[in-house]
Every structure is written in structure tokens, then in C-alpha cells.
Length: 199
Picture 1 (cartoon, rainbow, N blue to C red):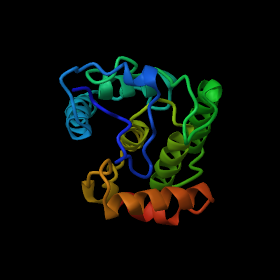
Picture 2 (picture 1 turned 90 degrees about the horizontal axis):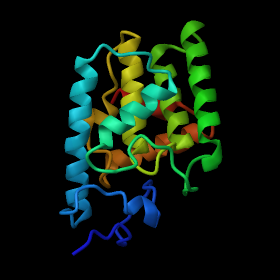
Picture 3 (picture 1 turned 180 degrees about the horizontal axis):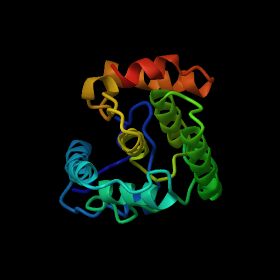
Picture 4 (picture 1 turned 90 degrees about the vertical axis):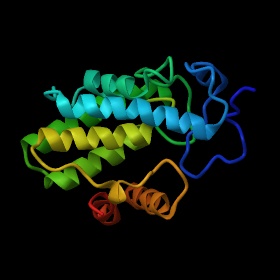
């Protein structure tokens, strides 16, 4: 039995994968979305251990952004760390990913150097913009949250609690609050997101 990633239980905020992306699944024994989520979570835990043990290089670089995604999903997806090559239900045009990402990284470096925002707001705005760009075929929310935490660590600040470390992958009231906060930020209102990241 093959894993059906097109099953009707797709939830709000998930990015559908195209057939080529689905073909990039490394573990062939996985048959359910729940098993895939568990497998990805184990992969992410390994990346998290690396991130907190390592001396963090410059977080605000394309190479770190791609390397972190690769470490988070390298045992799950062949395309881990590779920018998407198709348009999705969210995100910029796929052909503009590198341009938009490097604009964001440059903006964020400017924000840091000029104390444009307090650290929490800087990291929350960075997270929101990275989610909007949606650089990768999958895992963008989890990746952008870890990128924001890595940035906070580099700034010498405590990482975000992200709704008290709730599982933001599965449907829940906490996930609904998170998505609502991101949608408000889409309209320029970051108040809910700033509350959520420390809740």
C-alpha cells in the first residue's frame, strides 16, 4: 500500500505536493500521513539537536536557510534543502524564490544592524515573511519557526514558545490561532503573532 498524500484529510494551511515532489519520499515503508508526520518529526528532532549544539553560523544567509531545511528533512525527502519548482496555494512565484529570499535576508540583516524592531518583533516578522515566500515544497512552517528560533539564539534571546510547544502540524485550536495570527500579519497586524509566539 502506497502513502496517499492526496487523501481528503488535508487541513487548513497545508501545502499540497505535486507528483514529482511526492516521488521524492525516501522511506518507502511509510503508508499513512500519521506515520509520515512521525518520521518527519524524528528527522526534525535530529536537526534541532544539531542546531542547539552547534555554534550558529550567520543565520541570515541563503546557505544556512537551505542547510537547515536539508538537516530537518534529509531522511524524509530527496529534495530537502532544494527550492520548490512549482507554484503552491501560498507563496511567491517559484521562479522568484531566490530573489525574494535574499531580499528578506538583506532586510532582516538591516533590521538587526539598525535595531529597527525589538528582537521578538524582528524574529516574528522574519518568520512571517519566510512563510509567505514558502521556499520549499513542504515543511515551510516548521522550517521558518526553527529559522526564527535560530535568529533569536544568534541575537542572544530566548527562543519562542510557539503556543506552548504544541504540535502545530496537526489540526488543533492552537494551530488555528497560529494560522489566524499569520493571516492578520498578512494584513500588516502583527499583534496576535507577537502574543502567540510567546504563549
